[in-house]
Image: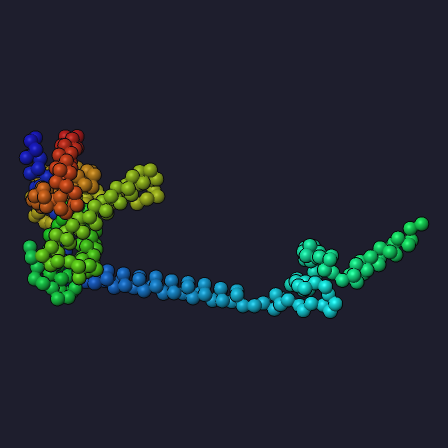
Amino acid sequence: MSDEDLEKRVGDALRDGRAAPREGLEARLVAGAHACVTKRRHRVALVLAMATSAVAAVVLIVGLGLRPSVDKVVPAPRQGSSSATPLPAAADGVISDEMIAADLNEFQPEAAPRARWSYALEPLADVVKEIP
Amino acid sequence: MTLPLPRTRDELLRELVATTGRRGFAIAYDLLRDGAEAEDAVQEALYRVCERWADIDPATAEGWFLRVLTNHCLRLLRRRRVRGLLGRLLPGRVVPDGEGAADLVDERPGADDTLARRAEVTRVLGAVSSLPPMQRAALVLRYGHDLGVPQVATLLGVGQGTVKTHLVRGLSRLRGELEKS
């Protein structure tokens, strides 16, 4: 079969096998294109609404998270305390070992009053007295 | 073909549908072999024209529409091909390609007088459907719609040399398929 014959065969088959469109094709096409436009507009509106809600939710959560908490209020320094910075209070009011360690690390003997040394040495002196 | 200057998007839409709607449907049908899918494809192309109507020169609106339509049909054909391959790999999980011999027969009364003619149409269209999307599109546009190579190249968005290559390869493969059947 020559190329020309094959081309003709293909063309004839395509034309003969082509179904006629159903009645009212033009009206359906116009209506369909309008429906597509409306559908896309609705989709865009939905996406915008979802994005706005998400942003509002994030703003709300961050805003609430940044509000000062009662638990985080730092107590005033004790009377007679040598420390310039007061001890941070734990949420349950109990001072943890880590807080004490941090406080001791900041302790500067040369700046501390002698009274503090004497308080620390008093129990030791009692122990020493009991040693035979 | 030059369209009169449309004032609104709706006017452009109606002009396009009136002048090119049936031709667009015929191209989409020849490529997809499914009436409902062809209508959907034409609507999609019209929608895209509506979307960009302000940028479109009315003188080139028809060509623009047909090119968008052809590209959309090619995309659908490629998707079908992938679905078909997946259907073969995962039988029962993916709905196979809806193309079959039954879709290829024109059911209009009196369209084909003899069974032999129907069988010939079915055989040739079955062989055309088995071609890769670009070869199929090139053959359909060139021989089914009598477009010249430059027009086919414009619609497919490729060079004329590429179109000629697709035509030669498509015909060669088609000849092989028809000799086999």
